[in-house]
Amino acid sequence: MHRKKNIRNEVIRTILMAAVVFGVSSIVGVRVQAEESQITENQVKENQVTENELEENQSKESQTEENTQESQPSQNTKESKVEYNTSSNSSNNDDEEDPGPVGPGTAALPEMAHVYEGIDYYPVYDFYYYTSQYSDIKRVFGNDPEGALKHYVTFGIKEGRQATSSFDIKSYRNANPDLRSEFEYDNKKYVLHFIRNGNYEGRITNGVDTIRNPITKLRGKDYKSVYDYEYYKSNNPDVYKAYGDDDIALLKHFIEFGMREERQAKEDFDEKSYRYANADLRWAFKADKTKYYNHFIKYGYKEGRVTTGVTELKNVITKADGVDYSSVYNFKYYIQSYPDLKNAFGTEDDASALDHFLKYGMRERRKGNENFEVNSYRYQYRDLRLAFKNNFPSYYRHYIQHGRYENRNTKGVTSLQNPVTIYGGIELAPIYDYYYYASHYPDLINAYGDDDVSLLEHFGGIGIIEGRVAKDQYDQALYADVKERLHPTPPPPPPVVATDSMFYVAQKYSSPSQYLILVDRSRHQVGIFSGSKGRWGEVDYFLCGDGKASTPTVEGLFHIINKKPYFDSGSARCWYATRIYKGYLFHSVLYTQTSTPSRIKDGRLGVGVSHGCVRLDINKAKWIYDNIPIGTTVVIYS
Image (cartoon, rainbow, N blue to C red; front, top):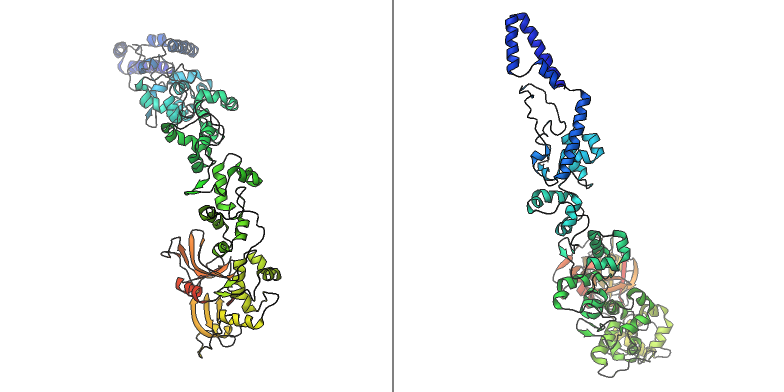
């Protein structure tokens, strides 16, 4: 309307100016020119409509468009969306102002109004449809095609809004199980798929209110061999109550929770039956229920394994690493005898129970079946105690491999039989009695318990040097003679000149053996001396790696307790270990866990680095291991 008024005013001004300048003849010429361009004041008046009439026409046209869309839902051409005004009443003047978007039948939708960030949404989007379907959209974007498109792409798709009569996101999702498996609830992916592929594949895009062909595949994995949508929905009412007919949600629940909860999702696959029937899988997977489902999907289905009808464990596991423990272990007996194990493993997890027995039960001297008592077996056989000391798993394994074939007794012995008395090749029975020694020195019972072999080693290595009495009645001369034979008095060392200040510290200490060891934490140095108090001679000095600030090496006066060729700490191996006190030892720097010390894992020396032990170069650790007697005095200071 405003444009027509402007045309009229412009015509009148032109006529008046022409009359003044050129006269009446010029006016006639102007009139002729106006007639040729079909723009006269009368025609402008004829084309003029009031603002109310235009709005009324737009409303009628909008209604006509809606009726047309309902009767022709399959039209997808651009011409069906916008009708260009080709009336002869339109002006061809290039200087006319853009009238802006109005209703269909009056002006064209701008060419880029269905393209956003390089993607053409024409197959799924119609401005007029979108604004007519949603009053909130029309109110905000009724005259803003680009804003409406941006809203659809940014929010409308996520909200599942329909922007054209020919494409409904929900229908597209319901109709296409392959897309549901891939896209789940990501509406944007469904829209982009239709634009790029589905539009050309002739896929169904509307009129589908319920799920077709419920999915069994998600994130690239197909669960059809263990999962059926209808069965899972029918047999798990709590899940159905939570998710209804949503096949994506039901399958996700099965994957994320159902398998862990041992829910049956298909008539011909029962995870419990599968687990009960296959001992090899129980040993491999133990209580990890999910792995049984996944194994069947990948292997068991092809192998034809039993999946239903098994109500109790088959072939209860007693073997591990090629060893059959059935002579010392029974699953039901083990579980029923120890409530802590029954609480941990229940009555079905035979694999975890056996694993516990091997890793912990034997060390804890637990009884694995009715017929084998490890304490009785150890008490009765001195030869085994000499071989194994307090390494309890070794007694179980000895019986499995040898004892049962030798008809050795395995129960009923409640006290130690025939305590050992030979040490260093010398019979100590005349000056040593196990029961007397154990009962008179509580510190030894705390340290060694009923280990008669270690107790004898203490007496022969330390006790006799300290002058401990080990028998009620004994020959003191014989005692002194045995002591000298076990620990000969070293010849006095030749005079030496001190090369380190540790030499002077050493002179005030005595040692039961001919050696003395000092550890100076402030300098991270070890000193070895030979001789006796006040007459110590230097043997060697070398750097060490003692305890770091948070785990310092204990300080004080100690005596060497025992030795072992190596021990493992975490992923490292420590060679030539000589125990100083409780958990404090001399040993090599850290090596990898190989059968021989071939590769150093942590070789730092001269700094505080350990958890309390004293780390040494492996050659120094071996020298102490080979040469320093049990009982030798060790002084640690800073």
